[in-house]
Image 1 (cartoon, rainbow, N blue to C red):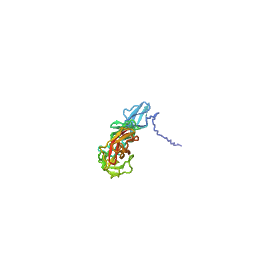
Image 2: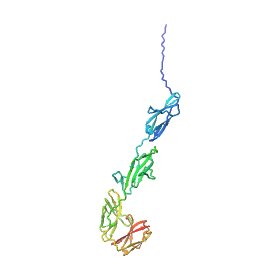
Image 3: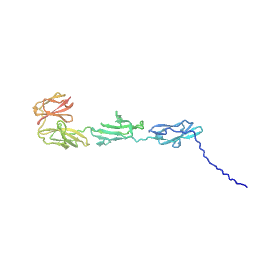
Image 4: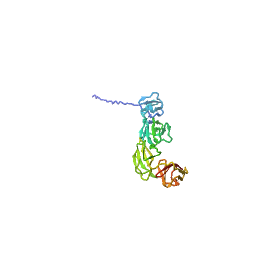
Length: 353
């Protein structure tokens, strides 16, 4: 009996891969470059090299290192095909990235009272203008006025106290060598002090007066030592009725110009019946004086008062007239000495040492 024997053959297909005995790597693998920077990618020592950028062979890039630049290569991926003996191995891909920054900018934290026709910011006298350099520019800061570096001004904030054209240069702290200029000047004008223009009679007016260059004023009484309390009046004209037995009086004025800038002045209101007598002579000795000043007047001194007014127009001392007056408590400076009665008023300048 014949037997039929079926023999089954199992054929298995096997895919064979060639794998090198080394792993090529590229360093650094997290490169972030500053603008305009240059850096190098490198791999281990092999027999041959070929570098690729974004999967495309770089002609001539056959060295162990590859130079990359922020301007041309930031945002691209690189790898190297390294050959050792008969085997070639591709490295992992590394990303070359780069920092990108917006141009510098400056914030003006102080509101101007007016913007001029050429863009200049205009401020009242005495204003301190604060400029602030915007983030991320916080390193290697230099502020300039008319192109000249301002000594000691190396912070993000600067306080301006005088007119000029200001600008700044700086860099981000992550890229300290990447210094950028603001590129424009910031023109700032700080006006001189506003001086209210009262009638010149001289320095006094009779019964009332109007400020010629004021938009509005607030008037206060002034006593012998300090300013008065509540306002006496407002407007641009000061008119006061007869004050009883007092025939001349000082008033402090806080006046505003067309920009809203304030000018503080002291005016003297003289009522009918008081005048300067050219026949009377007032003498001061010594002048300059330190602690005692002697006053000599060719009239009955018991009818007179003496008042000392500083350069700000403030009456800082007043008393009954006498030959010797103690001025030791007054600060050094220039004073107007006014000797007055209900009929006459005389003035002399005194220098207090």
